[in-house]
Image (tube, rainbow, N blue to C red; front, side):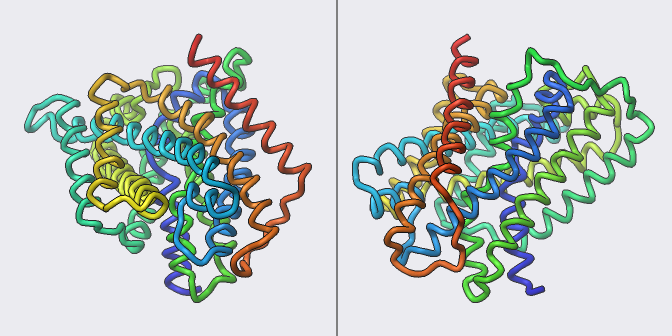
Amino acid sequence: MSKNYLLAIATLMGTVIGVGLFALPFVINQAGIMPLFIYMIGLAIIQYFLHLLFAEAVLSTNDKHRLPGFVEKYINKRSKKFAFLVEVIGAYGSILAYLIVGGLFLHQLINPYLGGSIFLYSTILFAFVSLIAFFDIKMIAGVELILTAFLVVVIGLIAWRGFGHIQLANYHLVDWRSIFLPYGPIFFAVSGGAAIPEVCRLLSFEKDKIKSAIGWGTFLAAGLMLFFVLVVLGIVGAEISPDTLASLGLILNDGVITLALIFGLLAIITSYIVIAQATEEIFEWDFKLNNKLAWFLAGFVPYFLYLIGWTDLIRVISFSGAVAGGLSGLILIWLILKIKVKPEKVSVINNKLTKPLAYFLSLLFILGMIYEIWATIN
């Protein structure tokens, strides 16, 4: 097992495990643990397949592109504009979610000592990540590996410290009124497509291991999130809030929560950096904008949305997951069918994407989008 193989797995896991992790306990408390298992397993499988499809696009093409660039190359320029809109809405939604939760975590860590509002700490987080993106400091894969190991330790510590507080009464099987609620947040939480080009780069001399690395990176992350949600709900139960770690802190009032806040903040920062730089690459690689303008468009638009009050975390990740994520999946499915007809080079990953499977997944994504739009306007 090579070092780059482990780094590739950690890079994908680090991108997947972000802000979505901390919103899931609140959502699952409303829907029940049966939907948690169904959605987490089913959507992790679907996201794994989408990750493989994106890897096939990367490995079938000579030039560097993000999704809009692939669409222009293999479909047409008009479709590229739609793909761009979808990708940017999804990326802005992700960054907005990082600002909301990252500001909360910073506030909980530093406010007791220095004071200051949540808005101030969200702004500090925005400025910090924007500075990293401006100087094009890439997230080092080794950092993701360390943080992934840290994640396992922190979740283990929470489970150990909270074991005596776990009560079966805190779990309920299902609330049929909220049965579809977890779809968007979980689809958002298990998405790591932004990291796929980096996974392919890390394994450029071991291309036969890319599929395996994507599998481990996707399913290990999903498994850890599933375990985290079960532990947190068992400890906190109906008192859970959208700010998961604050709810835990009321029960486990010790250093474990401080450690968890530090981890949560680092996990958010690493994912934030990956998404911010991937968004910048859309403007640079696919639209040939200069890097300063690309940097500005990637970072400042979501911050403006935060300034005008788009701070409902559950609504942001639900919309980003179900609508932007669903549309992105739709585009990717039909893009790959085009790429298979005339790839620029032979890919080591050759997904078996049949027309019936493409129609089934498309229908699933469309139904998810319809539900989320209906839920948003009601």
